[in-house]
Image 1 (cartoon, rainbow, N blue to C red):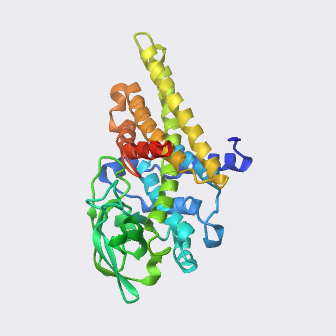
Image 2 (image 1 turned 180 degrees about the vertical axis):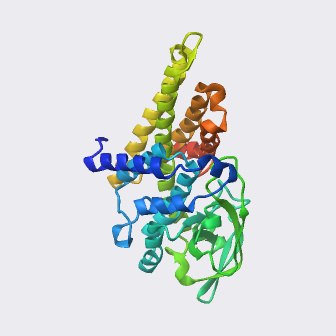
Image 3 (image 1 turned 45 degrees about the vertical axis):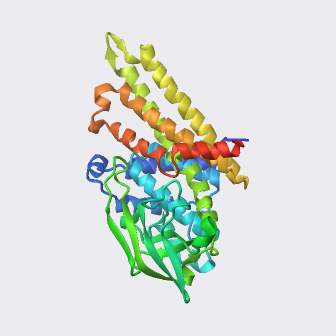
Length: 382
């Protein structure tokens, strides 16, 4: 395995960092406090080509290989401090774009992928329900009953990222309860479809610039052409999305951890207490060493995953390992960065406490850390 970046990937890394630093951090403290999503930043990301990275060029995307996408998303986290914006980008790319690319009909691809790539359309997956989180398929209550050449959806979904701004949802519903998980199917449902209602935005501890809401289906009628993939393929479609999402949704956190470490090392060299830099104190220096070890470990596993996917492998266990390690590492390093800066780190103006709040969610979304451990244990034969 050769993780050395090509000249093109190195150039892309520099370009993404420069773009993110210059274009995506405006008014972030205020937007975080107000829970405001930035449509301008979203459009800038699309114009740069970020949303289109996983989309084939035939449908307006960049058609990037998996390792190149890793480089781009890590670099985005290095330059962009808006973790909420990045979270919304990831939600669209892995839970909406990826399943359409893999399972969509030619008509569905041509209808949705160009807009998702150029930023004129926003999409996301709708899976979680009030009574179905980790047990997504076993406890699914949303149904889609066939009525002639249409399906009638009834039920509700919750904690849906991008819901207040989305134009299309990849909705999972049961089309045959008697078959259990084998009776779940996926549908592409337009926001304007009668019977689909988006609830009020939900307020969150972190990732506040990424909008979230509940959506409800009340006799929501969709045509048969809205079915994504074959009927009963819901679990296969969801697992495909999760394989991408678990492995990639925290790539940006590796870039953020690098930014945190550089800032903390510089502060530890400059901050004088008791007549010497605080970095000379073992308690501080060891904390920074731990941050360095987490960063390098996370990067190696992340790049290994990207390399495996570029080789055409389906590394489901490795995706779970990457999700588990980076989510835990990002929270630990965010706390260490805050602690290193002491009272200043606790202040909103220093923008360190926001990383802590944002990082907590990484241990929950896309499968909790406990679920990732269960997945890994299963692959170990336990």
